[in-house]
Image (cartoon, rainbow, N blue to C red):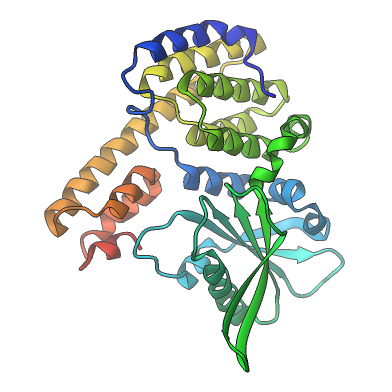
Length: 334
């Protein structure tokens, strides 16, 4: 169990006061950016991700030169007119003791259950294999809201006499909830444990004051684990994107972080301020893009509104450029 440090108690008390006077604890929340958080986490901590969640595969890999093939994966992707609600990564690695050939790992991080996940995993696997027929290929789905299930899943298509059966690995992240103490113990040696803890806390949908406590406790964990400044900054951005507080609690959160830093005699608070400023900047870009889309295509469908509020700055800027040549609203979000 995470505990809010004594140095943050004053911020917690203020948070409870504000929570009691708010009309709706969730009405003033910015939507969580799970896609951005998981992209950041996998880009930065891919070896630690496998070491924690798929250790048997991690031990087979020579980690000296991992290569991310995100652009290639995007070109192979499956069009989705309703917008992306998942994260895909393709990584090229070498296996230990092998001088030739590569291992390709396709990772799909999926939020609430998606009916199209099995077919999407199959299509990606087939297209990647067709592009790299001489390399080994492993397909792995991370189900952030799933607690029970087999460590493999199967996609089947066809009829007797002509059929396809495809098996891929699956990680049910909620299965770690009973093991949160273990994650806390693992965190000093494996920083990806913090990512899993943040996702589990976000899944729990705590009341605002409890969410405040959980978030402050996770920030304190970053400092207590003895991470480098760079890791604290990276992990702070990830958990901040997952665990979103109402606007009226953000000042209290910054105050709590300041107190934690005073206790540890470090000053990273500029990072916190930049996060808050970035969030406001992204809101402005999203508002401008929504206005342009409405002017060109008419009333925005719900899926487009969802994409806009969940996007990071990179996506927003790319979509703003693509609107110039787009013939349909779906073309903007490709």
